[in-house]
Picture (cartoon, rainbow, N blue to C red):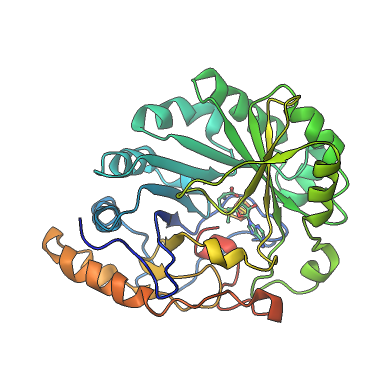
Length: 329
Ligand code: SAM
Ligand code: SF4
């Protein structure tokens, strides 16, 4: 194995978030409120299957054991199942996850599982179909729910559900969410709304800390689980009376970046050391041939030494990221 990916603050990187497309068919108010618009940039074609294979192999050769395939909406790629298989067949990769809006899950999740997808996150911001429609711009609540049921039918033991916490939409709906997971093995993850470059008043209007939810959970006897080395950023809570779990992702909390273990590659083949605040480093010129792997690894290792200690979101820094669909949330 090449040298384990490690930055100058002694953080080790086991987890790659790989975006495979910027395109999305939903219009979430906090992400793409006006829908997807092509960037108009030159060379804006997304990573091909051979490029994906090379980049994942380079990361795996430096100790990466988990890959999350994300976007935009990753399942919109016609070769999505082949992408899953390519990632899953890379030596060293033990967890292959995706984050999806669930639009294609009901029809395709069996195929994804056969290709090697081990973990699924699906976004559901409200259990009220009208509110779901209002937040995502799509009247697809029942379709997404049927996708979750189908995932259990085909054998997934747990499905993770992402909920972006929004003050006036869903922050008060904890009781409904808890009822929903009482007898379902769902890990419900409340994500604090993050400010991105194209967001203006929405953040001020809707950002709410996850602390209030954490306090309610603790008062009701929920307990914190221990983290594993390639786990994502959530603090996960469990309760003996519930089959489901609750995760809290609070990027504005002090110390959030101390446990960072993930790097990102965008759909256009740029390495992003942080979700916020960097331009991305070109990798594509080193994804043309298998023989370029040593140079590719060297570039990734060199860049990693420039990773900063924190995202500085607290200072109002939203960096270069216009919205999370652009480099994969
Ligand atoms: N389209 C897929 C989906 O929605 O699940 C994958 C891409 S999406 C960018 C990944 C995750 O980021 C979703 O759970 C979404 O809700 C979340 N997200 C997007 N914009 C966000 C923001 N500004 N703050 C917090 N979470 C956000
Ligand atoms: Fe699309 Fe996901 Fe962004 Fe919603 S959060 S607009 S589903 S990329």
